[in-house]
Length: 380
Image (cartoon, rainbow, N blue to C red):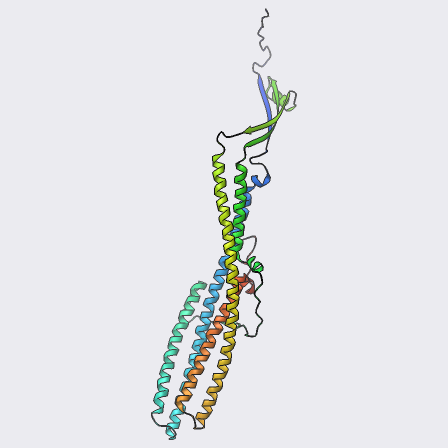
């Protein structure tokens, strides 16, 4: 029988220090394996940033087309007021001419009554046009977020598009314009987000399998620093490696439900892409057809005004020669005024149709020298 004799520390120090240096390397093999999985949050955040930029682009396009509509409404009000004033001045000249002819005995005294009635109507039209101009100026001032009053100048100086200008042909396929359409780009980015999240959810359904590599070093001494140095010097190394596998008893229910939810979101994003593409293709053809038709109507209105002006000039010459009737002259003036008003309305429709066409193609901002920074959400 052997007996262990206890030994006591007879040195200066009566304590013993144990130091352990342990290094472990864990590499996922199935779940959480791969850079695409570990950087899912970063990728989703990057896509969210791009979506925000496209939403800014979309909002700017919407504000641009709305602002152009208000601008052309103001131009219509200004041009209508100028037309009404010109017609009022012409009617005053007719009234003065009629009075002179009555004094000369060339017309009966009752002839002025008809002209006076027309003049009162023209005066009322001028007043209504002035009120319409104030309302258009007020709407545009609200859109521009400026303080406006009657003493402040708020007018338009448009560059009207010529009717003989070459219009852009509708593309055979909508892809070039579709790539510039913000709603479609936003839908594409959301589809990428859904696909990224789906890939992550699919990865989380895998079992936990990790390759594990470990190293440890041990140090014993009566001094703290000496024990630490012994552990760091690998005097007593210990290595191990292996594969750690974890399997849930009833599968990973949470990961499966997340995968099903992300699959549904991906299908929804895909359907949204198809819907936007089909809607855009139809709208692009309609907008181009509308642009062509409004230009055709505008050209016809120019020809009508030219014809009405010729008829009015001829009737005025007949009236000056004394062979024409005053009522016919007034009617020709009314016809000319209405044709000029129709020309103005058709010009506005053409300009709005052109702006809408540019808006649909996604080139409205570039046509007006507006750029959106790609690295910041600020307008340049």
